[in-house]
Length: 202
Image (tube, rainbow, N blue to C red; front, side, top):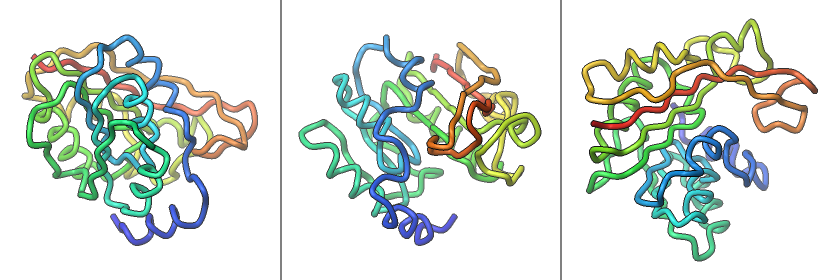
């Protein structure tokens, strides 16, 4: 992972990603009572900002300081802490109620380290939510990374969680309609395939 390359990408445009939260993050988490949350590999912090707007105390973690600075400017008075760190190894000082990993596309060893680290952050009853480009998107979908090494399936993420005391709420492939304006790319009126895993720490 090259933080400098991502710094350059974030510096090159007003917003690389949408100001709005990911659609699956919003749908899955809208009914959760507010608490403490971590947005891992947050980029410009769109999911952290959305959570904070709903009363959460959010921490956005990313290795690009440029992205975090952009998110901080958007945040205004929202309760978001911005942390420049390696999202595969960073841990909060206290357990949290929610960890979100949205489109953190890294090789399997890094992903496993991040997923297991995310589960360790949670207090009992805390929620883990991962959304990512699914491996089948290469052949069945549109847009997204074209490197199979950084794609995954829900089954891969469940294997990453093996031995950790969680109850799986949802683990499946989900469809996301994309257009040329979509932040992850794609052709108009095409379907992209993501994997979604939601679990609760026992």
